[in-house]
Length: 303
Image (cartoon, rainbow, N blue to C red; front, side):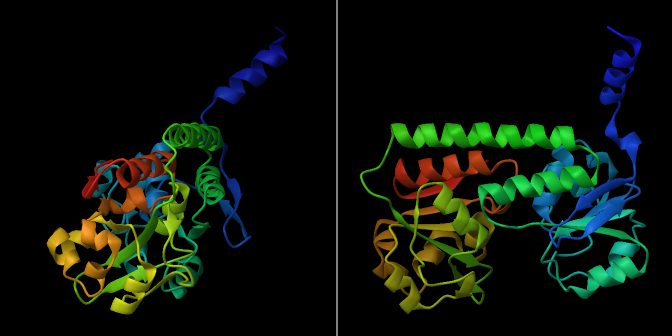
């Protein structure tokens, strides 16, 4: 092998963290130049999961409240919830890169961070398989880990092939109608439809969205629940806990008048796992398929 060829091969094996600055086109179509990834603040749970998965978890110095996977990230200080942020808390951690969802709120926080000289990368949030791949690639490119990012994409694709094979072997006679309920205590109850990430996961798992005509999430009413006539109710585990578990759910207006309520057919999943569309999306969809189609009554899915 020629010396030049050997040199090129050796350079290809050098960790990409040595090759800064990095350039990435984020979810807004803006080309962002990332000069340093030494101190990263992540503003949502899936972005945090991807950062750790591509191998830069040790450079994450701050997180938002939705970032609790992998568990070691809980040792990092929180800057608040991704939709209720303040620039002051983020800036106090002296970040060189802030990265999070394209719909981070309030939006002026992003403007304030950029005005302070901090590099900000916004990540796409489309609740589809293609959206998941785009999310992984943007995060990986922003931190110079494109090779590892493509490995995650290929792993996701393998999981999706396993999902389709499993569904084909155990094809149900008819698709179940599923309704996703977002709950944060008895006073915060929503029915979610098209465009909501957990609903995208339900569709990927082979379930029919029972909340047709509803975009994103709308306040839950007895009428909307009864009209949807779901065969299965899907919810976040934390949301279910916030209303007193399964007994509390079955007492909500309209639930008892649905096929799912009458049979107690409820699937509760970890928030990030169900609402991810990240590296674990294929595995989460397979677990949801199993819980909805192959198990009776109440099922709690533990990733």
